[in-house]
Length: 544
Length: 85
Image 1: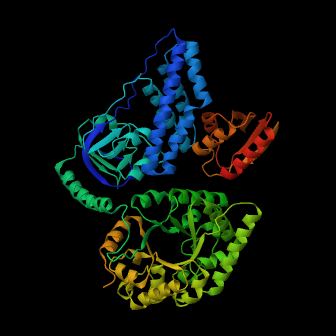
Image 2 (image 1 turned 90 degrees about the horizontal axis):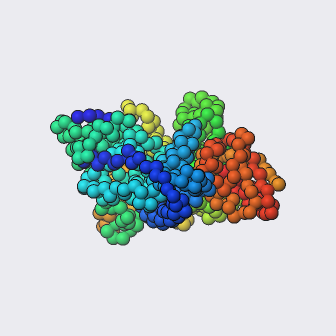
Image 3 (image 1 turned 30 degrees about the horizontal axis):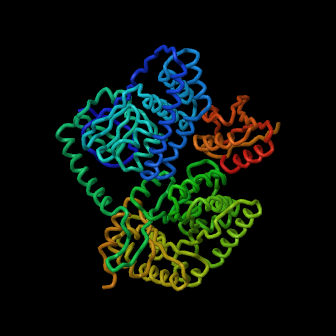
Protein backbone atom coordinates (compact mmCIF):
# COMPACT_ATOMS: atom_id res chain seq x y z
CA UNK A 1 0.00 0.00 0.00
CA UNK A 2 1.22 3.47 -0.79
CA UNK A 3 -0.25 6.60 0.57
CA UNK A 4 -0.22 10.10 -0.91
CA UNK A 5 -1.46 13.39 0.37
CA UNK A 6 -2.77 16.28 -1.65
CA UNK A 7 -5.47 18.86 -1.60
CA UNK A 8 -9.05 17.63 -1.78
CA UNK A 9 -10.85 19.93 -4.20
CA UNK A 10 -14.07 18.00 -4.35
CA UNK A 11 -15.32 16.00 -1.43
CA UNK A 12 -16.46 12.41 -1.59
CA UNK A 13 -15.06 8.91 -1.23
CA UNK A 14 -14.18 6.70 -4.17
CA UNK A 15 -12.77 3.19 -4.26
CA UNK A 16 -11.98 2.41 -7.85
CA UNK A 17 -9.47 1.26 -10.43
CA UNK A 18 -6.74 3.55 -11.63
CA UNK A 19 -6.74 4.71 -15.21
CA UNK A 20 -3.41 6.36 -15.75
CA UNK A 21 -3.75 9.13 -18.25
CA UNK A 22 -0.74 9.30 -20.55
CA UNK A 23 0.13 12.90 -20.22
CA UNK A 24 3.74 12.10 -20.84
CA UNK A 25 3.55 14.14 -23.99
CA UNK A 26 4.20 12.16 -27.11
CA UNK A 27 7.25 13.84 -28.56
CA UNK A 28 6.39 15.64 -31.76
CA UNK A 29 8.80 14.83 -34.54
CA UNK A 30 10.44 17.60 -36.47
CA UNK A 31 10.08 16.76 -40.14
CA UNK A 32 11.53 18.85 -42.91
CA UNK A 33 9.07 19.66 -45.70
CA UNK A 34 9.25 21.00 -49.24
CA UNK A 35 5.70 22.19 -49.55
CA UNK A 36 5.31 24.79 -46.80
CA UNK A 37 2.08 26.05 -48.36
CA UNK A 38 0.53 22.68 -47.69
CA UNK A 39 1.66 22.81 -44.05
CA UNK A 40 0.21 26.28 -43.63
CA UNK A 41 -3.07 25.02 -45.07
CA UNK A 42 -3.04 22.03 -42.70
CA UNK A 43 -2.54 24.43 -39.83
CA UNK A 44 -5.44 26.64 -40.91
CA UNK A 45 -7.74 23.68 -41.37
CA UNK A 46 -6.79 22.18 -38.04
CA UNK A 47 -7.49 25.51 -36.41
CA UNK A 48 -10.95 25.59 -37.92
CA UNK A 49 -11.63 22.08 -36.65
CA UNK A 50 -10.25 22.95 -33.22
CA UNK A 51 -12.52 25.98 -33.12
CA UNK A 52 -15.56 23.85 -33.88
CA UNK A 53 -14.56 21.33 -31.19
CA UNK A 54 -14.06 24.08 -28.64
CA UNK A 55 -17.46 25.50 -29.44
CA UNK A 56 -18.94 22.09 -28.76
CA UNK A 57 -17.01 21.70 -25.50
CA UNK A 58 -18.03 25.21 -24.51
CA UNK A 59 -21.68 24.30 -24.99
CA UNK A 60 -21.26 21.03 -23.09
CA UNK A 61 -19.55 22.84 -20.24
CA UNK A 62 -22.25 25.50 -20.29
CA UNK A 63 -24.87 22.83 -19.71
CA UNK A 64 -22.86 20.88 -17.16
CA UNK A 65 -21.06 23.48 -15.13
CA UNK A 66 -22.54 26.89 -15.94
CA UNK A 67 -21.41 30.00 -17.73
CA UNK A 68 -18.69 31.16 -15.38
CA UNK A 69 -16.86 27.85 -15.58
CA UNK A 70 -17.48 27.39 -19.28
CA UNK A 71 -15.92 30.70 -20.13
CA UNK A 72 -12.39 29.30 -20.24
CA UNK A 73 -13.28 27.59 -23.50
CA UNK A 74 -14.34 30.82 -25.12
CA UNK A 75 -10.93 32.14 -24.03
CA UNK A 76 -9.35 29.11 -25.69
CA UNK A 77 -11.14 30.07 -28.89
CA UNK A 78 -9.71 33.56 -28.61
CA UNK A 79 -6.23 32.18 -27.94
CA UNK A 80 -6.57 30.17 -31.12
CA UNK A 81 -6.90 33.47 -32.99
CA UNK A 82 -4.09 35.17 -31.12
CA UNK A 83 -1.87 36.98 -33.58
CA UNK A 84 1.45 36.28 -31.90
CA UNK A 85 0.64 32.63 -31.57
CA UNK A 86 -0.36 32.41 -35.21
CA UNK A 87 2.58 34.46 -36.46
CA UNK A 88 4.97 32.26 -34.52
CA UNK A 89 3.56 29.06 -36.01
CA UNK A 90 3.52 30.47 -39.54
CA UNK A 91 7.03 31.83 -39.29
CA UNK A 92 8.42 28.53 -37.98
CA UNK A 93 6.83 26.64 -40.87
CA UNK A 94 8.05 29.21 -43.40
CA UNK A 95 11.57 29.81 -42.25
CA UNK A 96 12.49 26.38 -40.94
CA UNK A 97 10.52 24.48 -43.61
CA UNK A 98 9.11 22.06 -41.10
CA UNK A 99 5.84 20.25 -40.41
CA UNK A 100 2.97 22.19 -38.88
CA UNK A 101 2.78 19.87 -35.85
CA UNK A 102 6.30 20.79 -34.84
CA UNK A 103 5.67 24.50 -35.31
CA UNK A 104 2.55 24.38 -33.16
CA UNK A 105 4.26 22.32 -30.48
CA UNK A 106 7.24 24.64 -30.20
CA UNK A 107 5.02 27.73 -30.18
CA UNK A 108 2.78 26.27 -27.51
CA UNK A 109 5.75 25.40 -25.33
CA UNK A 110 7.21 28.89 -25.70
CA UNK A 111 4.03 30.55 -24.58
CA UNK A 112 3.52 28.02 -21.80
CA UNK A 113 7.02 28.86 -20.56
CA UNK A 114 6.19 32.55 -20.58
CA UNK A 115 3.20 31.90 -18.33
CA UNK A 116 5.15 29.44 -16.18
CA UNK A 117 7.71 32.12 -15.36
CA UNK A 118 5.18 34.66 -14.14
CA UNK A 119 5.05 35.44 -10.44
CA UNK A 120 1.28 35.19 -10.17
CA UNK A 121 -0.28 31.80 -9.37
CA UNK A 122 -3.30 32.50 -11.53
CA UNK A 123 -1.16 33.35 -14.56
CA UNK A 124 1.10 30.34 -13.99
CA UNK A 125 -1.98 28.16 -14.17
CA UNK A 126 -2.62 29.53 -17.67
CA UNK A 127 0.23 27.48 -19.12
CA UNK A 128 -2.20 24.56 -19.07
CA UNK A 129 -4.52 26.51 -21.34
CA UNK A 130 -1.86 27.21 -23.96
CA UNK A 131 -0.68 23.59 -23.94
CA UNK A 132 -4.28 22.51 -24.20
CA UNK A 133 -5.00 24.47 -27.37
CA UNK A 134 -1.69 23.42 -28.93
CA UNK A 135 -2.34 19.72 -28.41
CA UNK A 136 -5.84 20.21 -29.71
CA UNK A 137 -4.58 21.73 -32.94
CA UNK A 138 -2.02 18.94 -33.31
CA UNK A 139 -4.70 16.31 -32.75
CA UNK A 140 -6.82 17.99 -35.38
CA UNK A 141 -3.97 17.61 -37.86
CA UNK A 142 -3.95 13.91 -37.16
CA UNK A 143 -0.32 14.18 -36.20
CA UNK A 144 -0.74 12.76 -32.75
CA UNK A 145 -2.75 9.66 -32.10
CA UNK A 146 -5.92 10.62 -30.36
CA UNK A 147 -6.02 8.38 -27.35
CA UNK A 148 -9.46 6.88 -27.31
CA UNK A 149 -9.33 5.74 -23.75
CA UNK A 150 -11.15 2.56 -23.10
CA UNK A 151 -12.46 3.37 -19.68
CA UNK A 152 -13.96 0.87 -17.35
CA UNK A 153 -16.67 1.77 -14.93
CA UNK A 154 -15.50 3.22 -11.69
CA UNK A 155 -12.30 4.67 -13.13
CA UNK A 156 -10.10 6.94 -11.11
CA UNK A 157 -8.30 9.13 -13.58
CA UNK A 158 -4.68 9.53 -12.47
CA UNK A 159 -2.58 12.05 -14.29
CA UNK A 160 0.34 14.39 -14.11
CA UNK A 161 -2.15 17.14 -14.79
CA UNK A 162 -5.40 17.40 -16.70
CA UNK A 163 -6.23 20.12 -19.14
CA UNK A 164 -9.59 21.83 -18.82
CA UNK A 165 -10.90 20.30 -22.01
CA UNK A 166 -9.68 16.81 -21.10
CA UNK A 167 -11.74 17.10 -17.96
CA UNK A 168 -14.87 18.19 -19.77
CA UNK A 169 -14.78 15.60 -22.55
CA UNK A 170 -14.24 12.62 -20.21
CA UNK A 171 -17.11 10.19 -20.02
CA UNK A 172 -18.37 11.25 -16.62
CA UNK A 173 -20.56 8.17 -16.22
CA UNK A 174 -17.39 6.12 -15.88
CA UNK A 175 -15.21 8.46 -13.90
CA UNK A 176 -15.47 8.15 -10.15
CA UNK A 177 -12.44 10.17 -9.14
CA UNK A 178 -9.59 12.43 -10.19
CA UNK A 179 -6.06 12.49 -8.86
CA UNK A 180 -3.40 14.74 -10.31
CA UNK A 181 0.24 15.04 -9.36
CA UNK A 182 0.25 18.74 -10.11
CA UNK A 183 -2.54 21.21 -10.41
CA UNK A 184 -3.60 24.24 -8.48
CA UNK A 185 -6.91 25.05 -6.89
CA UNK A 186 -6.97 27.93 -9.37
CA UNK A 187 -7.00 25.46 -12.21
CA UNK A 188 -10.19 25.11 -14.13
CA UNK A 189 -9.93 21.37 -13.67
CA UNK A 190 -10.36 21.78 -9.94
CA UNK A 191 -13.32 24.06 -10.45
CA UNK A 192 -14.90 21.75 -13.00
CA UNK A 193 -14.42 18.66 -10.82
CA UNK A 194 -16.08 20.52 -8.01
CA UNK A 195 -19.10 21.54 -10.00
CA UNK A 196 -19.44 18.03 -11.44
CA UNK A 197 -19.26 16.59 -7.94
CA UNK A 198 -16.56 14.05 -8.69
CA UNK A 199 -14.16 13.42 -5.77
CA UNK A 200 -10.83 14.94 -6.68
CA UNK A 201 -7.45 15.35 -5.03
CA UNK A 202 -4.78 17.48 -6.64
CA UNK A 203 -1.13 18.24 -6.04
CA UNK A 204 -0.24 14.82 -4.61
CA UNK A 205 3.37 15.10 -5.75
CA UNK A 206 5.70 14.28 -8.61
CA UNK A 207 6.27 10.63 -7.70
CA UNK A 208 2.59 9.75 -7.87
CA UNK A 209 2.20 8.93 -11.57
CA UNK A 210 5.18 6.57 -11.46
CA UNK A 211 3.75 4.75 -8.46
CA UNK A 212 0.40 3.87 -9.92
CA UNK A 213 -0.45 1.50 -12.77
CA UNK A 214 -3.55 0.97 -14.85
CA UNK A 215 -5.95 -1.23 -12.95
CA UNK A 216 -4.46 -0.67 -9.48
CA UNK A 217 -6.97 -0.51 -6.70
CA UNK A 218 -7.11 3.07 -5.45
CA UNK A 219 -8.96 4.98 -2.74
CA UNK A 220 -9.63 8.69 -3.18
CA UNK A 221 -10.64 10.57 -0.08
CA UNK A 222 -11.69 13.96 -1.35
CA UNK A 223 -12.61 15.09 2.17
CA UNK A 224 -9.13 14.80 3.62
CA UNK A 225 -7.06 14.82 0.44
CA UNK A 226 -5.77 11.27 0.95
CA UNK A 227 -4.92 8.69 -1.69
CA UNK A 228 -4.24 5.00 -1.08
CA UNK A 229 -2.80 2.92 -3.91
CA UNK A 230 -3.39 -0.83 -3.46
CA UNK A 231 -4.76 -0.37 0.06
CA UNK A 232 -4.47 -3.12 2.68
CA UNK A 233 -7.54 -4.97 3.95
CA UNK A 234 -7.93 -2.84 7.05
CA UNK A 235 -7.84 0.48 5.21
CA UNK A 236 -10.18 -0.90 2.60
CA UNK A 237 -12.69 -1.84 5.26
CA UNK A 238 -12.60 1.58 6.87
CA UNK A 239 -13.11 3.22 3.53
CA UNK A 240 -15.85 0.88 2.41
CA UNK A 241 -17.82 2.01 5.43
CA UNK A 242 -17.07 5.65 4.65
CA UNK A 243 -18.07 5.11 1.08
CA UNK A 244 -21.41 3.58 2.09
CA UNK A 245 -22.23 6.69 4.08
CA UNK A 246 -21.02 8.89 1.28
CA UNK A 247 -23.05 6.96 -1.29
CA UNK A 248 -26.15 7.23 0.81
CA UNK A 249 -25.76 10.99 0.76
CA UNK A 250 -25.15 11.03 -2.97
CA UNK A 251 -28.08 8.71 -3.58
CA UNK A 252 -30.26 11.23 -1.87
CA UNK A 253 -28.73 13.83 -4.06
CA UNK A 254 -29.42 11.97 -7.27
CA UNK A 255 -33.01 11.21 -6.40
CA UNK A 256 -33.77 14.71 -5.19
CA UNK A 257 -31.77 16.95 -7.47
CA UNK A 258 -33.99 19.05 -9.66
CA UNK A 259 -37.08 18.20 -7.63
CA UNK A 260 -39.35 20.83 -6.08
CA UNK A 261 -39.51 21.55 -2.38
CA UNK A 262 -43.17 20.75 -2.23
CA UNK A 263 -45.20 18.89 0.38
CA UNK A 264 -47.60 16.06 -0.48
CA UNK A 265 -50.49 18.52 -0.38
CA UNK A 266 -48.76 20.95 -2.70
CA UNK A 267 -47.38 23.58 -0.32
CA UNK A 268 -44.18 25.03 -1.66
CA UNK A 269 -41.27 26.39 0.31
CA UNK A 270 -37.87 27.66 -0.78
CA UNK A 271 -34.75 25.93 0.50
CA UNK A 272 -31.67 28.13 0.16
CA UNK A 273 -28.11 27.80 1.36
CA UNK A 274 -26.00 29.78 3.84
CA UNK A 275 -22.48 30.66 2.76
CA UNK A 276 -19.57 32.47 4.32
CA UNK A 277 -17.42 33.09 1.27
CA UNK A 278 -17.55 33.03 -2.50
CA UNK A 279 -15.58 29.76 -2.52
CA UNK A 280 -18.65 27.81 -1.42
CA UNK A 281 -20.70 28.54 -4.54
CA UNK A 282 -19.74 25.16 -6.02
CA UNK A 283 -21.28 23.43 -3.00
CA UNK A 284 -24.42 25.51 -3.27
CA UNK A 285 -24.96 24.63 -6.92
CA UNK A 286 -23.99 21.01 -6.42
CA UNK A 287 -26.54 20.54 -3.68
CA UNK A 288 -29.18 22.18 -5.83
CA UNK A 289 -30.08 25.00 -3.45
CA UNK A 290 -32.74 27.32 -4.83
CA UNK A 291 -30.72 30.36 -3.90
CA UNK A 292 -28.51 31.80 -1.20
CA UNK A 293 -30.51 32.77 1.85
CA UNK A 294 -27.61 34.16 3.83
CA UNK A 295 -24.32 35.31 2.40
CA UNK A 296 -22.26 36.52 5.34
CA UNK A 297 -20.15 39.38 4.03
CA UNK A 298 -17.87 39.44 7.10
CA UNK A 299 -15.08 37.43 5.50
CA UNK A 300 -14.36 40.36 3.20
CA UNK A 301 -13.54 42.42 6.27
CA UNK A 302 -11.84 39.77 8.35
CA UNK A 303 -9.38 38.32 5.86
CA UNK A 304 -7.60 41.57 5.10
CA UNK A 305 -5.65 44.08 7.16
CA UNK A 306 -7.52 47.01 5.78
CA UNK A 307 -11.01 47.99 4.71
CA UNK A 308 -12.03 46.11 1.57
CA UNK A 309 -12.48 48.73 -1.15
CA UNK A 310 -15.66 49.15 -3.11
CA UNK A 311 -14.20 47.53 -6.21
CA UNK A 312 -13.00 44.42 -4.35
CA UNK A 313 -16.40 43.97 -2.77
CA UNK A 314 -18.17 44.61 -6.05
CA UNK A 315 -16.11 41.87 -7.74
CA UNK A 316 -17.02 39.32 -5.08
CA UNK A 317 -20.72 40.17 -5.09
CA UNK A 318 -20.78 40.16 -8.89
CA UNK A 319 -19.12 36.74 -9.05
CA UNK A 320 -21.61 35.28 -6.60
CA UNK A 321 -24.58 36.79 -8.41
CA UNK A 322 -23.36 35.67 -11.81
CA UNK A 323 -22.57 32.17 -10.60
CA UNK A 324 -26.06 31.83 -9.17
CA UNK A 325 -27.43 32.82 -12.58
CA UNK A 326 -30.61 34.61 -11.59
CA UNK A 327 -31.33 32.68 -8.42
CA UNK A 328 -31.89 34.82 -5.36
CA UNK A 329 -28.82 35.83 -3.38
CA UNK A 330 -29.43 37.43 0.02
CA UNK A 331 -26.31 39.27 1.11
CA UNK A 332 -26.15 40.36 4.71
CA UNK A 333 -24.28 43.58 5.33
CA UNK A 334 -21.35 43.68 7.73
CA UNK A 335 -22.23 41.91 10.97
CA UNK A 336 -19.37 42.08 13.41
CA UNK A 337 -18.81 43.32 16.91
CA UNK A 338 -16.09 43.45 19.51
CA UNK A 339 -15.95 39.64 19.81
CA UNK A 340 -15.10 39.15 16.14
CA UNK A 341 -13.36 42.13 14.70
CA UNK A 342 -10.56 43.24 12.44
CA UNK A 343 -7.80 45.28 14.04
CA UNK A 344 -8.12 48.17 11.63
CA UNK A 345 -11.68 48.76 12.84
CA UNK A 346 -10.26 49.71 16.26
CA UNK A 347 -13.36 48.74 18.19
CA UNK A 348 -13.26 49.35 21.90
CA UNK A 349 -13.25 46.32 24.14
CA UNK A 350 -16.65 45.64 25.54
CA UNK A 351 -17.75 43.96 28.72
CA UNK A 352 -20.50 42.18 26.82
CA UNK A 353 -20.01 42.21 23.07
CA UNK A 354 -23.17 40.19 22.38
CA UNK A 355 -25.07 43.20 23.67
CA UNK A 356 -22.63 45.72 22.26
CA UNK A 357 -21.90 47.87 19.25
CA UNK A 358 -22.46 45.28 16.54
CA UNK A 359 -24.30 44.66 13.29
CA UNK A 360 -26.37 47.61 12.12
CA UNK A 361 -25.37 49.58 15.22
CA UNK A 362 -21.76 49.53 14.10
CA UNK A 363 -22.71 50.32 10.49
CA UNK A 364 -24.82 53.31 11.50
CA UNK A 365 -22.05 54.65 13.70
CA UNK A 366 -19.55 54.30 10.83
CA UNK A 367 -21.66 55.38 7.85
CA UNK A 368 -18.69 55.55 5.47
CA UNK A 369 -17.95 51.82 5.80
CA UNK A 370 -21.64 51.12 5.39
CA UNK A 371 -22.01 53.32 2.30
CA UNK A 372 -19.02 51.70 0.61
CA UNK A 373 -20.60 48.30 1.06
CA UNK A 374 -24.00 49.47 -0.15
CA UNK A 375 -22.50 51.10 -3.24
CA UNK A 376 -20.70 47.84 -4.07
CA UNK A 377 -23.89 45.87 -3.52
CA UNK A 378 -26.07 48.12 -5.66
CA UNK A 379 -23.49 48.21 -8.43
CA UNK A 380 -23.45 44.41 -8.41
CA UNK A 381 -27.25 44.21 -8.34
CA UNK A 382 -27.53 44.33 -12.13
CA UNK A 383 -25.66 41.02 -12.45
CA UNK A 384 -28.28 38.82 -10.84
CA UNK A 385 -31.10 38.59 -8.32
CA UNK A 386 -29.78 40.42 -5.29
CA UNK A 387 -31.49 40.98 -1.96
CA UNK A 388 -29.82 43.06 0.76
CA UNK A 389 -30.31 42.20 4.41
CA UNK A 390 -29.48 44.19 7.53
CA UNK A 391 -28.48 42.50 10.80
CA UNK A 392 -29.30 43.24 14.43
CA UNK A 393 -32.25 45.58 14.02
CA UNK A 394 -34.06 46.43 17.26
CA UNK A 395 -35.59 49.84 16.59
CA UNK A 396 -37.81 51.29 13.91
CA UNK A 397 -35.55 54.34 13.62
CA UNK A 398 -32.55 52.14 12.81
CA UNK A 399 -34.39 50.73 9.85
CA UNK A 400 -35.57 54.20 8.78
CA UNK A 401 -32.02 55.52 8.96
CA UNK A 402 -30.74 52.50 7.05
CA UNK A 403 -33.30 52.94 4.30
CA UNK A 404 -32.37 56.63 4.06
CA UNK A 405 -28.75 55.67 3.49
CA UNK A 406 -29.83 53.19 0.80
CA UNK A 407 -31.80 55.94 -0.95
CA UNK A 408 -28.80 58.26 -0.74
CA UNK A 409 -26.44 55.62 -2.18
CA UNK A 410 -28.82 54.94 -5.05
CA UNK A 411 -29.21 58.62 -5.89
CA UNK A 412 -25.43 59.04 -5.89
CA UNK A 413 -25.08 56.12 -8.26
CA UNK A 414 -27.75 57.60 -10.49
CA UNK A 415 -25.88 60.92 -10.60
CA UNK A 416 -22.71 59.12 -11.68
CA UNK A 417 -24.67 57.28 -14.36
CA UNK A 418 -23.94 53.90 -12.75
CA UNK A 419 -26.61 51.26 -13.22
CA UNK A 420 -28.29 49.42 -10.37
CA UNK A 421 -31.35 47.26 -10.08
CA UNK A 422 -34.27 49.28 -8.73
CA UNK A 423 -36.11 46.10 -7.75
CA UNK A 424 -33.39 44.88 -5.35
CA UNK A 425 -35.20 43.53 -2.32
CA UNK A 426 -34.48 44.89 1.15
CA UNK A 427 -34.91 42.83 4.28
CA UNK A 428 -33.85 42.57 7.87
CA UNK A 429 -32.71 39.90 10.24
CA UNK A 430 -35.14 39.18 13.03
CA UNK A 431 -32.71 38.12 15.72
CA UNK A 432 -33.71 40.21 18.71
CA UNK A 433 -36.96 39.70 20.61
CA UNK A 434 -37.55 43.44 20.14
CA UNK A 435 -37.61 43.11 16.37
CA UNK A 436 -39.90 40.08 16.50
CA UNK A 437 -42.32 41.86 18.83
CA UNK A 438 -42.53 44.96 16.63
CA UNK A 439 -42.49 42.92 13.41
CA UNK A 440 -45.93 44.37 12.61
CA UNK A 441 -44.33 47.83 12.58
CA UNK A 442 -41.23 46.74 10.60
CA UNK A 443 -42.94 44.54 8.01
CA UNK A 444 -44.46 47.36 5.91
CA UNK A 445 -40.97 48.85 5.50
CA UNK A 446 -39.28 45.77 4.02
CA UNK A 447 -39.64 43.04 1.40
CA UNK A 448 -38.64 40.21 3.70
CA UNK A 449 -37.64 39.04 7.15
CA UNK A 450 -35.01 36.44 7.86
CA UNK A 451 -35.15 34.96 11.34
CA UNK A 452 -31.70 34.37 12.80
CA UNK A 453 -32.58 31.69 15.31
CA UNK A 454 -29.15 31.45 16.94
CA UNK A 455 -29.15 35.00 18.21
CA UNK A 456 -32.89 35.06 18.73
CA UNK A 457 -32.49 32.05 21.04
CA UNK A 458 -29.70 33.54 23.07
CA UNK A 459 -31.36 36.92 23.42
CA UNK A 460 -34.80 35.51 24.20
CA UNK A 461 -33.63 32.89 26.68
CA UNK A 462 -30.80 35.03 28.10
CA UNK A 463 -28.43 32.14 27.44
CA UNK A 464 -24.90 32.61 26.17
CA UNK A 465 -24.53 30.30 23.17
CA UNK A 466 -20.86 29.68 23.90
CA UNK A 467 -21.37 28.61 27.51
CA UNK A 468 -21.49 24.79 27.73
CA UNK A 469 -22.89 24.88 31.26
CA UNK A 470 -26.10 26.40 29.98
CA UNK A 471 -27.03 23.59 27.67
CA UNK A 472 -30.03 22.39 29.67
CA UNK A 473 -31.37 25.93 29.93
CA UNK A 474 -30.91 26.74 26.30
CA UNK A 475 -33.92 24.99 24.81
CA UNK A 476 -33.97 25.86 21.14
CA UNK A 477 -37.55 24.57 20.87
CA UNK A 478 -38.72 26.86 23.69
CA UNK A 479 -42.34 27.90 23.28
CA UNK A 480 -41.35 31.57 23.46
CA UNK A 481 -39.17 31.19 20.38
CA UNK A 482 -41.76 29.32 18.40
CA UNK A 483 -44.33 32.00 19.26
CA UNK A 484 -41.95 34.77 18.14
CA UNK A 485 -41.33 32.98 14.86
CA UNK A 486 -45.03 32.44 14.25
CA UNK A 487 -45.86 36.04 15.16
CA UNK A 488 -43.12 37.38 12.86
CA UNK A 489 -44.19 35.24 9.95
CA UNK A 490 -47.86 36.25 10.35
CA UNK A 491 -46.98 39.93 10.42
CA UNK A 492 -44.85 39.54 7.31
CA UNK A 493 -47.67 37.80 5.49
CA UNK A 494 -50.20 40.50 6.42
CA UNK A 495 -47.90 43.08 4.90
CA UNK A 496 -46.98 41.24 1.74
CA UNK A 497 -43.43 40.41 2.86
CA UNK A 498 -41.89 36.94 2.89
CA UNK A 499 -40.24 35.21 5.85
CA UNK A 500 -37.15 33.05 5.92
CA UNK A 501 -35.28 31.31 8.70
CA UNK A 502 -31.51 31.28 8.49
CA UNK A 503 -30.23 30.05 11.84
CA UNK A 504 -29.42 26.49 12.92
CA UNK A 505 -33.08 25.82 13.55
CA UNK A 506 -33.80 26.04 9.81
CA UNK A 507 -32.00 22.71 9.36
CA UNK A 508 -33.75 21.07 12.32
CA UNK A 509 -35.96 18.57 10.54
CA UNK A 510 -38.12 18.01 13.62
CA UNK A 511 -39.41 21.57 13.13
CA UNK A 512 -39.78 21.66 9.36
CA UNK A 513 -43.47 20.82 9.53
CA UNK A 514 -44.08 23.40 12.27
CA UNK A 515 -42.37 26.10 10.22
CA UNK A 516 -44.34 25.33 7.10
CA UNK A 517 -47.58 25.44 9.07
CA UNK A 518 -46.54 28.80 10.49
CA UNK A 519 -46.33 30.12 6.96
CA UNK A 520 -42.55 30.41 6.71
CA UNK A 521 -41.62 30.85 3.04
CA UNK A 522 -37.96 29.96 3.02
CA UNK A 523 -35.43 27.93 4.98
CA UNK A 524 -31.75 28.74 4.58
CA UNK A 525 -29.43 25.96 5.66
CA UNK A 526 -25.84 24.77 5.14
CA UNK A 527 -25.49 23.62 1.52
CA UNK A 528 -24.95 20.01 2.58
CA UNK A 529 -28.37 19.97 4.32
CA UNK A 530 -30.44 21.27 1.42
CA UNK A 531 -31.45 17.89 0.04
CA UNK A 532 -32.09 16.38 3.46
CA UNK A 533 -34.59 19.17 4.11
CA UNK A 534 -36.05 18.66 0.65
CA UNK A 535 -36.67 14.98 1.33
CA UNK A 536 -38.43 15.85 4.61
CA UNK A 537 -40.59 18.49 2.93
CA UNK A 538 -41.62 16.06 0.21
CA UNK A 539 -42.84 13.57 2.80
CA UNK A 540 -45.02 16.04 4.72
CA UNK A 541 -48.72 16.63 4.48
CA UNK A 542 -49.43 19.92 6.23
CA UNK A 543 -53.20 19.78 5.80
CA UNK A 544 -53.51 17.23 8.59
CA UNK B 1 -2.23 60.00 -30.83
CA UNK B 2 -4.17 59.97 -27.60
CA UNK B 3 -3.53 58.29 -24.29
CA UNK B 4 -4.73 57.77 -20.73
CA UNK B 5 -3.34 56.17 -17.63
CA UNK B 6 -5.32 53.91 -15.39
CA UNK B 7 -4.76 52.21 -12.05
CA UNK B 8 -6.12 48.65 -12.07
CA UNK B 9 -8.77 48.12 -9.42
CA UNK B 10 -9.89 44.58 -10.26
CA UNK B 11 -8.45 42.29 -7.61
CA UNK B 12 -7.43 39.68 -10.20
CA UNK B 13 -5.76 42.22 -12.52
CA UNK B 14 -5.94 41.75 -16.30
CA UNK B 15 -6.64 38.04 -16.16
CA UNK B 16 -7.84 35.80 -18.97
CA UNK B 17 -11.41 37.01 -19.17
CA UNK B 18 -10.89 40.78 -19.37
CA UNK B 19 -7.81 40.26 -21.56
CA UNK B 20 -9.98 38.28 -23.96
CA UNK B 21 -12.69 40.91 -23.97
CA UNK B 22 -10.20 43.74 -24.35
CA UNK B 23 -8.43 42.15 -27.31
CA UNK B 24 -11.78 41.50 -28.96
CA UNK B 25 -12.77 45.13 -28.45
CA UNK B 26 -9.41 46.40 -29.71
CA UNK B 27 -9.90 44.52 -32.97
CA UNK B 28 -13.00 46.59 -33.70
CA UNK B 29 -10.85 49.64 -34.37
CA UNK B 30 -8.38 50.42 -37.10
CA UNK B 31 -6.26 52.46 -34.69
CA UNK B 32 -3.29 50.88 -33.02
CA UNK B 33 -3.97 50.41 -29.30
CA UNK B 34 -0.97 49.89 -27.06
CA UNK B 35 -1.04 48.89 -23.42
CA UNK B 36 2.08 49.78 -21.49
CA UNK B 37 3.27 48.64 -18.10
CA UNK B 38 6.78 49.23 -16.75
CA UNK B 39 7.97 50.49 -20.19
CA UNK B 40 6.81 47.27 -21.82
CA UNK B 41 4.40 47.79 -24.72
CA UNK B 42 1.86 45.33 -25.98
CA UNK B 43 -0.69 45.67 -28.73
CA UNK B 44 -4.09 45.29 -27.13
CA UNK B 45 -5.28 42.93 -29.86
CA UNK B 46 -2.67 40.41 -28.76
CA UNK B 47 -4.34 38.35 -26.11
CA UNK B 48 -1.48 36.19 -24.89
CA UNK B 49 1.10 38.95 -24.78
CA UNK B 50 -1.42 41.07 -22.95
CA UNK B 51 -1.85 38.34 -20.34
CA UNK B 52 1.92 37.98 -20.33
CA UNK B 53 2.31 41.54 -19.01
CA UNK B 54 1.02 40.15 -15.72
CA UNK B 55 -0.91 43.30 -14.87
CA UNK B 56 -2.16 43.14 -11.31
CA UNK B 57 -4.45 45.07 -9.03
CA UNK B 58 -2.83 48.41 -8.18
CA UNK B 59 -0.61 48.50 -11.27
CA UNK B 60 -0.61 51.66 -13.36
CA UNK B 61 -1.00 51.14 -17.08
CA UNK B 62 -0.83 53.62 -19.92
CA UNK B 63 -2.99 53.07 -22.97
CA UNK B 64 -2.04 54.82 -26.17
CA UNK B 65 -4.36 54.99 -29.17
CA UNK B 66 -3.28 56.22 -32.58
CA UNK B 67 -5.04 56.08 -35.91
CA UNK B 68 -8.07 57.26 -37.81
CA UNK B 69 -10.69 56.28 -35.28
CA UNK B 70 -8.62 57.15 -32.23
CA UNK B 71 -11.27 59.34 -30.60
CA UNK B 72 -13.95 56.68 -30.67
CA UNK B 73 -11.45 53.98 -29.72
CA UNK B 74 -10.15 55.94 -26.76
CA UNK B 75 -13.67 56.48 -25.42
CA UNK B 76 -14.65 52.86 -25.70
CA UNK B 77 -11.39 51.47 -24.32
CA UNK B 78 -11.41 53.92 -21.43
CA UNK B 79 -14.99 52.95 -20.62
CA UNK B 80 -13.99 49.29 -20.81
CA UNK B 81 -11.21 49.79 -18.25
CA UNK B 82 -13.54 51.67 -15.93
CA UNK B 83 -16.19 48.99 -16.11
CA UNK B 84 -14.10 45.85 -16.06
CA UNK B 85 -10.77 46.63 -14.50
